[in-house]
Image 1 (tube, rainbow, N blue to C red):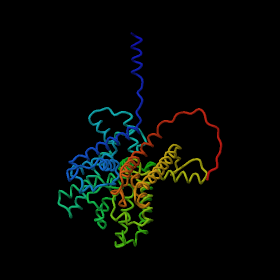
Image 2 (image 1 turned 90 degrees about the vertical axis):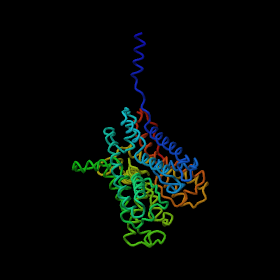
Image 3 (image 1 turned 60 degrees about the vertical axis):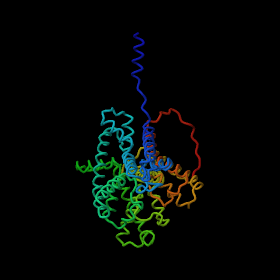
Image 4 (image 1 turned 180 degrees about the horizontal axis):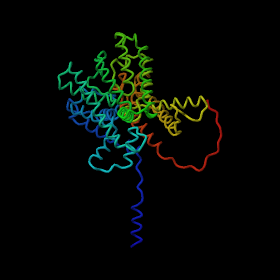
Length: 455
């Protein structure tokens, strides 16, 4: 009997393996997409009482959950109030992170938060340390609600001039959440083209998009830094701030120069309005998806700038997508180190760990590979110019939502492939980050070395 009891105790004391956080993260997004697809296919979800077809419902649910903004139906006219609310809840959860929402809910109802949940949530929020993840998550939700509330009030006041108070309030809330989550969904049907010259509306949207795209860890550190009167920010935060400012500044200058005399976009605007339109176009290209000038009217040079910005995207742990600003900076630093024939990759007087450099290259290569494979398929299935298909592909993978008008006319193949790309763009980098951050196995042997000639 004693032996049996001892064996039972030994079995019970064995540590259960921690589930793969990357798998949990992907599963959470898939469940949200499936639920959203079901709700949007219900008759109550559309204005005509028929509901969306399963393919269209799947596309819209994926676009909302992955905070992309590409649409195959007009949200403002096709969807009912119920359907629009489903879209809003999906991109709110997608922006915050499915694991953040579910874990905090579990914590609130008294459920024990596992180590796996904490690891996954920490990676999703861009927190490099395990400690303080729950506190950061609570601060994230608080920050989100406060910023979105302020934005909603500001936009309500702006929309009050064109709509009744109730409608203006609804529009203010919807677009504030959409902007902060970098979702790009609008209820106007023409994005923000009617507000091209409205300084107040432009600045509110720019502020919401930038704050949402900085990353929750960065925002939390900035608030703590201001309250404590600190003297130095972490390297991560400094890189994010400098990269964001540089991308916005250089991008605005380039778009301003290229589109200055373009009659299809900014040719008829005043000098100040051209600067504002250029700024908005660049800020929104970094995964937000709104536009104040027709995207299809942009010149090829401007489209290239926009696609580069969409590829880079926002910052880690933010509501935006893309390869991320820190990934881009790390790759540049690695190239600089290689040109200088240095083994160490350094930024800001600090040496980066080799696994961080490898992670940056893997994410970049994965994005490029996905774009190439998707292009091959869409160039076969879609009847559209190459530039339109490339633009739509980069927009979907970067979870941006800008479109040259191709999305509503996609074939069934395109309506299946682009949502898969949105999912990969939203979950892929996070999944890679979690997977690559796991403890590597110890290797006690190495294969024989032999050189090859490259370049």
